[in-house]
Amino acid sequence: STDRQVNTTVHRSCNALFRSVSRRGDKYDLCPLLSKLLSCLGEIMVKTDILQLIADLEKATFTDNWSRESIEDTLKHTYNFIYVAWKSETGLNITKLDSDFLSEGINKNIDIESFAGYLIANAIADETELLRIAVKQEMRGKGIAGKLIETYFKDVEEKCSRGLLEVRKSNLPARALYEKKGYNQLCERKNYYKDPVENGVIYEKIYDLTLL
Image (cartoon, rainbow, N blue to C red; front, top):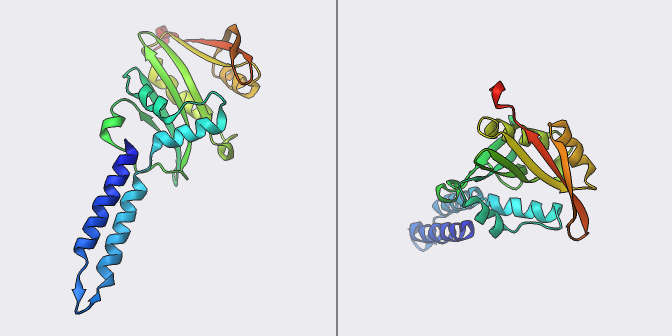
C-alpha cells in the first residue's frame, strides 16, 4: 500500500542519512546532514496517498461514504476508473486513474492542498455509470464538478450508448447539474438511501453514437 511505501522511503532515507554523515574531528558536518534531511523530506512529500484524499472527501461529503480500501478494490477492476481534479499554477487539471495506477505509483503533482475533487465511474460493454462525485467544500461553485463530468463524457461517449447515475432525491444542486449535462430522470427507487432514509432518483443519458 501507499502507507507502506512511505514508511519504506522514510526508513531507507534515514538509514542513508546516518550512513552518509561525515565527521570533522569530533564534530559532525551539518551541511551533508541537512542536505540529506531535506532530500528525505522531499521524498516523503511526493508520496501523497491520493486514494486516502478521496476517502477523506468521501467521509466529509457522504453518510454512505466509501473507505480507502473500497476505493482501492474498485480501482483493481479494469472497467472502473477515477478522475482526480487538482489545482496548479496553470489552473485546473484532471488526471485519470485506472487499474495501472496501483502498480505504477503515485502522481507527485497532487497533494492535500492542490486536490480539489474526484469522479468515480465505470464502463462495461456499451453502458457506463457515474458512481461517485465530490468537490472539496472550499472549492465548490467554481465549475469543478462540471469539468469532471465533461472529461468523463469525452472518455465514454465514443464507446458507450447509455449512461446512468443515482442521486438522493433531496440533492437538488446535484440533480440540477446532471440535468444541465444532459441527464434525464428515469425513475425512483423507494427508500434506497439510508441515514437518512430517502428515495434515490435514477438518471439516464443517451449518447448518440451516430454523431461521432
